[in-house]
Length: 322
Image 1 (cartoon, one colour):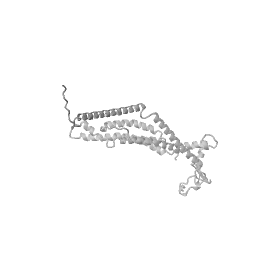
Image 2 (tube, helix red, strand yellow):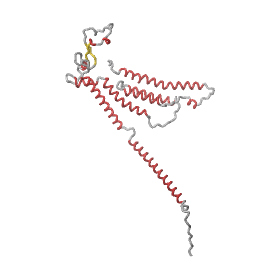
Image 3 (cartoon, helix red, strand yellow):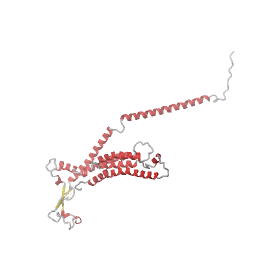
């Protein structure tokens, strides 16, 4: 890594995205529809008819198009991805996103109420697939930030040195810099990698025979020269253990908070169950009454048709009594 760290390029990109790009995006979202509506109204004013009614002005506004709010959802999901996946490299990103969203709420409200036609209302049970995308990005962000903290910072190597490789047995960082540097023999530099003759650096072709670099490798002359030392593997194991522990801790906290603060409160859930029960009861009572009416109507038809069932029976004459 450079002296500035391994994440300087990513941090620079996040600064540009969370400041310049989002500010320009808000200006563009407000300016483009306004310019198009202004140009459309300018052409309409040149029409031979002098009357330019309100409904014609509303009709000439911008339409939502086929995708509707797709671009708005996409913009928020991309922003959420930047501030969660790489928040460890630029901790100020969530604050910039909050400020941007406060401004964008007002910009979008003005844009949708004054620069676009009124859309056709449609019910939606949820935000659809976007919810699953956000949940997936939230889970992935835990993994990415754990790896960023473990593999791009000196936190784990420092802890391993302090607790396992400190020569004096004390919990301090004395001698850490020397321990984190390995030795390389300058005479073993390949010819294609050596400096040019016109450069002639002061450290080359001089009494200096070795150089130091950040790594954990055996020195020249060792039977395992330039291969990784056991400390390197200890640090790698500690980094992987840190990633696993951090993931489990964050997920446990997440599920605990989700259980503690449910999406639907218990009293609302009880009312929903009560409404479902009442609806099912009403449907059951309606079906029972309907069946009773059908049975009574059928019995009535059978009773009216009884005399004609046995036409072959003879009628008996009843004699009067004297």
